[in-house]
Image (tube, rainbow, N blue to C red; front, side, top):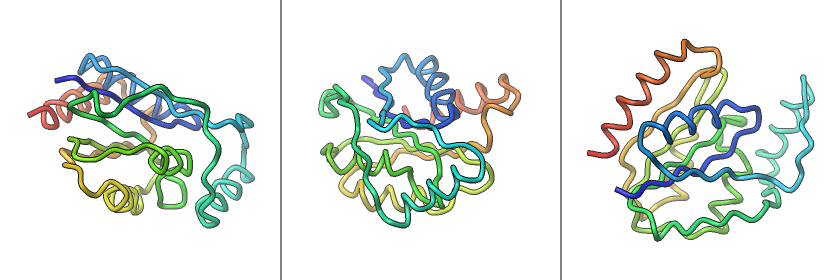
Length: 159
């Protein structure tokens, strides 16, 4: 099964998970990057990120050469921002047609996945969602446990 992982990672958690999934499934991997590469830190990061979600901003993205039609399974990963998918993921999905595909979803967060999967499922209507999983602070987890959890999940989405 030809598999693509498409993810956005602000601080590296989703990149870590995407890399482990890539190794588990021998998948192609694509990182969504915004044109605004400035990293906000501290409290201001939460104010800025939350306002992006509330104001429904769709950031400009750097080009991403991926053709969803050429994949059997597409895994989408996003951090949780204000109980929602990141604006970068929303922007990507708004400009990329994904329809009639087998998808799997993952998110990374510091304590609450909010409505991420429900909101993604609305955007991705017309696709088959094979599975979803969330990770709380994956960089802080025991890496062997994280790899095992991802490996077991990967088996279920490929079935």
